Image (cartoon, rainbow, N blue to C red; front, side, top):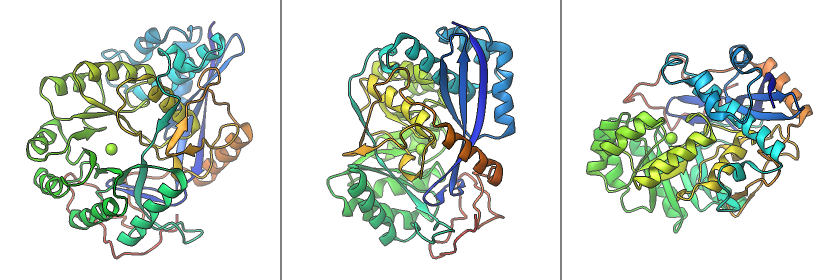
Length: 412
Ligand SMILES: [Mg+2]
């Protein structure tokens, strides 16, 4: 079997409300690139990558020079063809590779008539548990609804998500407001949902001393881990020495070089694997194996997914024996999907691993066209800018926090 074409389509899918984070904001929508890899046998495999637009689409087109005629089953060779760690050192094609790997696994699965999890060693669980992903949110400009800014709004939002989807683990994305205020927010959520477990992630916006102070204030809470309170392996190591909560990261251990550094001189206890940022599902399975060997914890990171990427997270979660935490997903904030049958459903905080051949998802072409049109209408946005603070930029550590009393609604 040979690859005969690679196509990429940018889509924009609305969120319930803009999601605020330490570096800025998701401006009320996710922009994603949907990738289709076609073969001489007529099988089409699906991939997905964050971001999009002309440059992303052109990058995938450029990969045809490397991959037309390539056998999609030769995944390791594809890695070296387009993302050899020395030859493509400055091209940074890891995310491109990931989207193409998803598509190739989807093709192999369809060819063999088996789900991707069977190619990867077989599933150990039928469903993958997810954490609620709590964000501070601006209100939706169209409806005026969905704001999460006050402690009361946050607690109600957390309770609402638990009620609706059944989550028993909750992640609060912080780094937006002053840490003193966010500490009160986190404690209030933990108090309101006693018995559940919690994790806090300020996207490394704090100084090390601030992180140590915050961490020591929350040691009594049932924390899964303390995610990226600071930036850098050494800063994480300093926090780990002073705070009795496992540290977690999706920032400073995102490849095998960093993983080896972290094994030799531990800074992070829990590694959040991301099927995109690590270069594919297989790379995550390998990394989970290293973590198993050195007894590091494993969780699953979310980079803001639609159904194709979510499926890769489900197959990953199904096959690794050491996934000991609920996975992260932004998915419940997204209002629609581009796959047949609509959005995946949560039941008791879990999503069923798809059993169809390949990734087990098919493109809904009407939705693909609809959200491609929406992308053309709205264009991209600056993820690392706050729409209501145009002169602000994120620094590490940050000292210029958003105002928790500011209830304006960005017209985006
Ligand atoms: Mg994180």
